[in-house]
Length: 363
Image 1 (cartoon, helix red, strand yellow):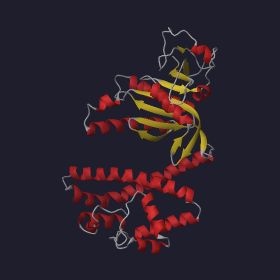
Image 2 (cartoon, one colour):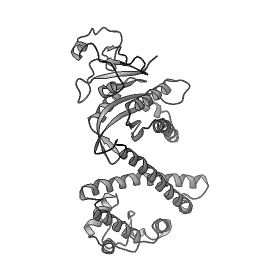
Image 3 (cartoon, one colour):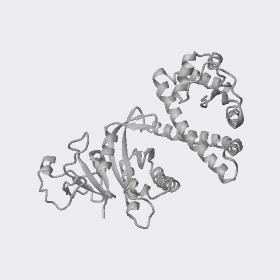
Image 4 (tube, one colour):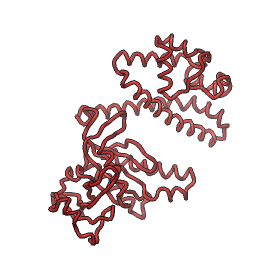
């Protein structure tokens, strides 16, 4: 559905062969012809192409085929079934476009690299490999998608994702010293290092019922239904990062628990913002938690109010993330796995008096 810079180059050479292989035929229809065959307006067809991230093509260019007609028909069917309402269509189709564009970029780069390593010409090799590899990738993608549908359905049936907002534990994990370390690595080494980091976090997360929402540079956003599960993950990651014999990088983490807005696989709201702010002030190797996590883990309340904390002796030797003193503060249950220490005077953007605790494993 997208076109190269020069429309006249379509239908010939390796690009034309690749297009015919991936889409089932050489392009032969204009956008008006596609819309007519699909039974939708040209305006609707053009809007869908844009939402999917494809560039507009001139009216008289034959850039489409039956695959595009079928895609429009399917979209129209979903609209008629009420799945793609006007409100949902834009956000859902746009998300599809972004997600698959990133996936396609990575897959093409990977196939080109494999072609080069095999000694083939990158362009010709890409076409040769795609005939063998792409059907297997497509089948595997469908399997992964159905498995994730099952997981999402299970959460819905369990009542943990019953609407646009739900109670979730949210954690940001940030690599300490990423900028300095990245300057010492080649591009290939940097990619390998980040992939190793993400793989380790993913393995630890899924084993404890958590899931990674996204990566933001050198930072990962993780959510879980259980604050305790996410606390275990954060503490284990910081423990590994502090081990000089473990290649896992040093990290810091911030956790919050509360109502979260879930939309198209992402999470939003004050709980997410608080977790991000806590991560930004956490010291290397430390885990900071908000009041929601503190209470969920059975933390005891301080004998002093926040006002008393603010008036405490600033010469205290033990300091929090922002330089303010902290108070030893075990979890209420003596048998608890955790020890929480209250930070004083936590001031971050948007939250002038944020209650926060440093989380540590007891003993």
